[in-house]
Structures are given as structure tokens and as C-alpha cells.
Amino acid sequence: MANLERTPRFSVIIPTKDRAPYLHHTLRTCSLQDYDNLDVVVSDDGSTDQTRDVVEEAARKDPRIRYVTPGPGVGMRDNFEFALDQVKPGYVIALCGDDGL
Image 1 (cartoon, rainbow, N blue to C red):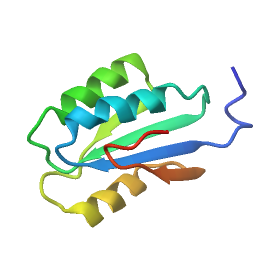
Image 2: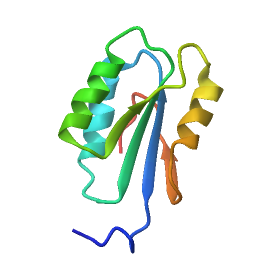
Image 3: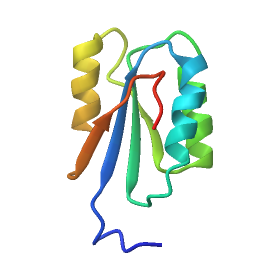
Image 4: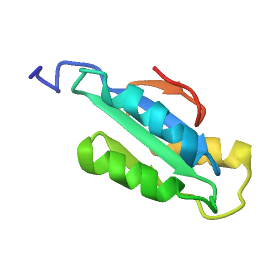
């Protein structure tokens, strides 16, 4: 394992809403990354599908993944900003709920 203090943090933000069927793939591709200092933040804008369940299941398998929510119905831009506010210093990449790394 690399020394996390000497390796830059890479954060992946995934602002999403009602994309549970696609998040399986997105989170699997994030989990396949072997970089230790990786933080995957899924920000849920009040989904009415199983988005939270999908993310929490992935997080049980990979502690680098976490679920956050700004509350329901904040909209795409505010959800993106909320997700961005959750990251620690380092590099950031944004994915949509149906993208992959």
C-alpha cells in the first residue's frame, strides 16, 4: 500500500438522481481502480429509485465509496456544487451516473 500522505488524493464526484440501474456499472469501474488515495462521492438529489441502496451496497464492498445527499430536489447545479463541497484537497473528476472510469 502506498503512503497516503505522499500520494495525491483523487476524488470522483458523481452527482445523480434516479440512475440506480446505471450506477452499478459506474461504481464498479471506480472500484476497479487500484489507487489507494481515491474518494468516490455519490451525491443523490432525492432519488425515488434504489440509488441509495446501490451506493450503500457498493460502499460495503469498497470503503472508498460514500453516499451523500443535499436533500431532495435541489437541482443539477446545486447537487454538483454540494458534491464538490464534500471533497478534500487534491484532484477532482466528475462523472455522471451512467459513466465509467
